[in-house]
Length: 147
Image (cartoon, rainbow, N blue to C red; front, top):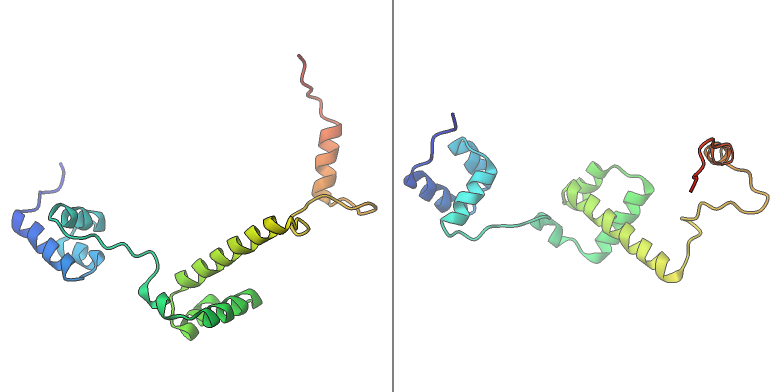
């Protein structure tokens, strides 16, 4: 047996609260339903759906602060401390770090600088234990393709 359907009045109340800016989680708790149901109901009632991946707090950070934040993150400072220091959420810091990593990889590809990503060994360099095992397995494989 499924849950009871909401009345028209309840749907209108959900839409009214949602359009006033009340969060979908809070509305869902109030009406004992899921956040998805709140958003779906608000959409059906003609409300504009809010989409915000990064909280608006991140918009207040300048480029200089962003660079300092990334430098401190790379140095190993705790994300929670950085979030409190720069008044942003931890999600924002992880987002910036991910974007920064993607940007550096794109720059490396443009320069054709594969020195950091290459796993080839140089002449005279010893193999790591994992590489030794793979080489041994390849050379002593009992299975061969036969056509």
